[in-house]
Length: 269
Image 1 (tube, helix red, strand yellow):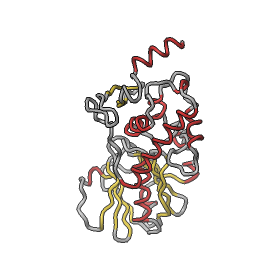
Image 2: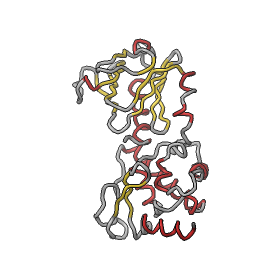
Image 3: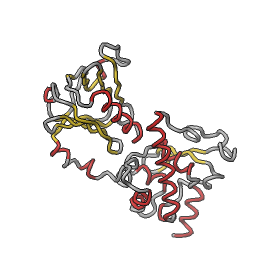
Image 4: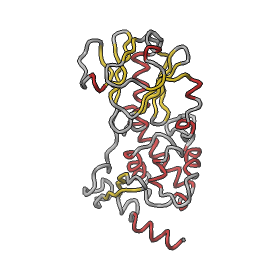
């Protein structure tokens, strides 16, 4: 799934390619966006794109907003006019052309065209926690938001909860905990403020780096069974939380893992 760094970088690219342009909008594929017709965007000026966690919001004159969520398989491609698309048109939800470029959305989990006032009533957006990439948020504020996790929630699971902080996905959950040498299986209510801030800070730095470079870190992600880059112990992986999203960690650098976490919880409970 696209994480917050991907959406932030995409917003930058769309602003550079189409910001201020009058666009030609069309739906090449089999399903149109939900909400208002695409014809409402045709000929409108694209004012700007922004990320909000894993959500992309593209604003147009007249108070219209294109709200896109890529989910597990979605992507936006930017092409030069006339350039051959890398995916078939049948998979495209929408194409926005302006000047000498064209931005095309393929697949994705949801897309809709709404007015700004309707966007303000969207519960999915209203329930989002602060964006980890928001430069106006401090590490302490973000750590305080994580502190709002339900009692007994494990750190790795809390980092994926978009109502606590928005934008973190499975890659940065694992890499951020590793960077802070934090055990992703410890409960949030076991961690002190300095420990939580260290996790937020490490995760945020990695995501900011990915926004700049377009490359996600892979020191431990999808490297189970290989030597830890820090201590050479064997890296581990296991599903975590109700959705069993895979967590990667080093038992020596970060902690013994889920079994030890359960024993600790039993002792405290």
